[in-house]
Length: 162
Image (cartoon, rainbow, N blue to C red; front, side, top):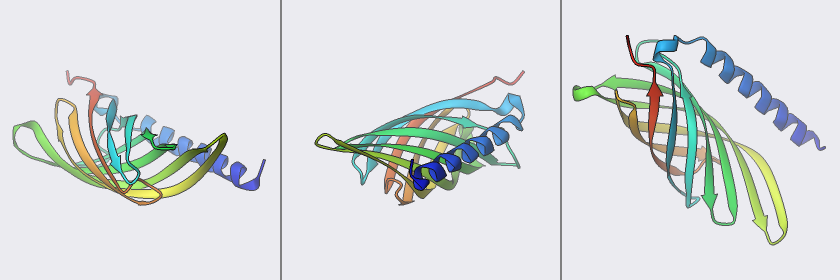
């Protein structure tokens, strides 16, 4: 195996460990797991994914790591997002949130019978709205090898408060 592949695997393993540590240190009553889907522009693809959302690390601040798979064109794209979000409560149970973070982008391109897989770094900025019942919709603006614009809708399942 090449040095690049081994280094990439180590980076992914360390990233997964960091995500696990953050996920296990939050209060259980505020944690949630969710699912999202939508579309991207540049590349033009559809995506589906899932995420884990911690409880509040500080008032209004949450950590929401996730993974998305994009499909369309002559390649597929997987994005591992390490996202921090800050929410501003609005009326009627809604909140405006913004944030972002780094991303690990895995691209598999097919040209004829040849398959090429590569790993890249990226980052993104998120802007969206979420309801206390778990529904959310957001836009992500990407940099590096992240999709330039991503629009998604999803739902986060949280433990009900006693």
